[in-house]
Length: 273
Length: 273
Image (cartoon, rainbow over all chains, first blue to last red; front, side, top):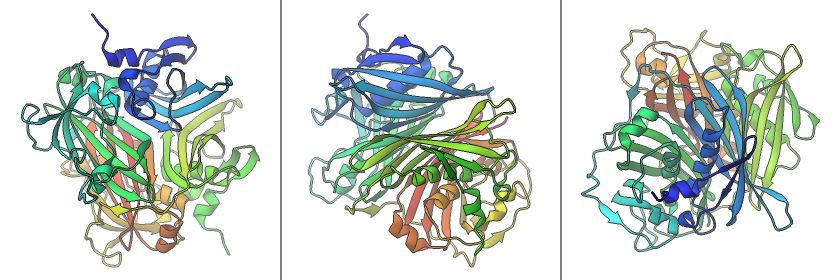
């Protein structure tokens, strides 16, 4: 069986304690570097591979300090503190420049947790939207090859087809899954959380340079909810709250088709002008 | 002039490059350690004191790995990467145990940014609520002394007065400011972002052990907006989105009295049973 492009992109080889070697993937290339979702997923992947890891992902914060260059990189992860049911990790991605100097491209913190069944309640019901089959399949040649790695069926809030400068909201709702389909796991969920194009493009109907500076994803799904999702669609909803002086924030929620909230994800994004 | 209790609690002394000594404050004591807001503010304070810092706070993520013990602590901050207009920091708080071993209680990442005036728009208008004068002044003897350091004028969503197990939502709206009043700055805004009591208490009307595991605050305010806020009230609004298997997420927004969104803040919180 051929390996899924996502698994190829996320392949890491242990080269020392807490140190993993990887390679950027042409399949997930964005304009100036890898799609940020794969970078976030790569950090999480390294934690999941670590032999001392306990529990499942609870929280993932990834800070994009600089664009990864095409080629080899190293992920370093360190279990700073292990409690009875939570474990706190620090992580970074490094590359070597032409002079052999080590450059940090990414910093991150991860929390894993052993979760037990407790009283639970969902206070954010999935919005009533069209089914995936009723929703428009989008194909993008642009702006990044990585978009071809996702099946995106749009409900509302497409990338503007006309840049007329008169947007009025920043809400996107979209059914999405890996292309080709791949059973959802923690790393692909981490990547999906960053699929949304910059909210500023939609809000202004103006295309300006923009890029995620920091993303935080809280995982509500455990292995059971991931299994139930399988290779099905995930409803993603994203909107911004404030655009101010070069940065905006984005809040996103991801549900599976049966309406289970899988994760909530937040990011702060740079934009120009 | 007597120092404000917040400034006393946040006092740090440089003891080496990027290394600052502090002391927990009885004024901001919570049940098992310092109020988490002061811990977050302390990390930010150390970054703001660092001589290599550029720009103002943009993003702050603080992970509570373990409770700080009463007494001395060290904050270590490191500017991992400095770009033209953003700077990426890693940080940690350490204490020494009885054997002199160093224990990490807190990990964090901070991003500071030099912000320029750009196209800006607020997409989250302040809700129409009662004025601070019309809102009920709450006084809490319980559950932590730190609550006495804040003037809290409640609009909706108080700590339940009866633990009858039948809550139906997790929304709190409250006017708040330091007590005694103190002009708002980045560190006090970071602390205010964590003032809300655990959403699970409200949603279930059941008091269970709960504590923040990780908080991320995005700063929309710059020095101008802080100056305009002064020692006035800040409207805080917080609600949870999902309670599942021992953890819930909380999203909070903070506006000043003139309706400017100062920051958005998110956290993942542990709860028992």
